[in-house]
Image 1 (tube, rainbow, N blue to C red):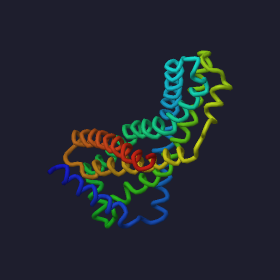
Image 2 (image 1 turned 120 degrees about the horizontal axis):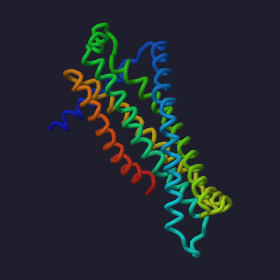
Image 3 (image 1 turned 90 degrees about the horizontal axis):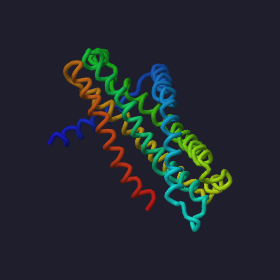
Image 4 (image 1 turned 90 degrees about the vertical axis):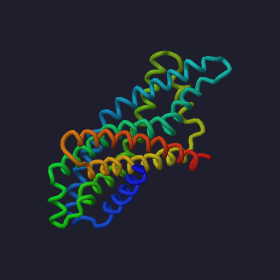
Length: 246
């Protein structure tokens, strides 16, 4: 019953977000701020995770395909496909759900318990749209950029790890990178990224917006937001894979 209640409130919350947009200048300023908060501030963690993720994938593939009958270029091919199809869009989304999601939920939750949202609504401002819509739009734009960057950096990390270990030559690795490349794989990854970005921002905004109580409840809302967003990312990942790749 609680699940259905939260689902209904979430759908109503989505309606509030897109119901009445703010003035262009106000929205633009909030949007630029969120681009920095959600995008630029996440580059560091995306780089670190992607480099080591690509390195681990390349090394695992190399060690598990150490057979003269298996061509060496498959290490590069497997690394590229793993980064594009699954690791970059999904793992980065889960990381951002923890970093961005908790930040959004705690920020909006704090505004709720300190009655700042009530003050906005008294002034006739659409609080949900004012607070959450710039975050949603910024995330929809910046997250695909972060994922493409993650794919690139992760592939470089795999190349560095595999060549420094002398398991596969640079020529063989690059041959695998270029082997049978399809633009649809990247499109698939970006579609997933956009869906994940929407889920992260709206779910986190939802839990923050409906926070009740004090500082302790803000922390609980933040935890619920991260957990719920992560679960929905995993579920939607399965659904999108079934729809787009089969």
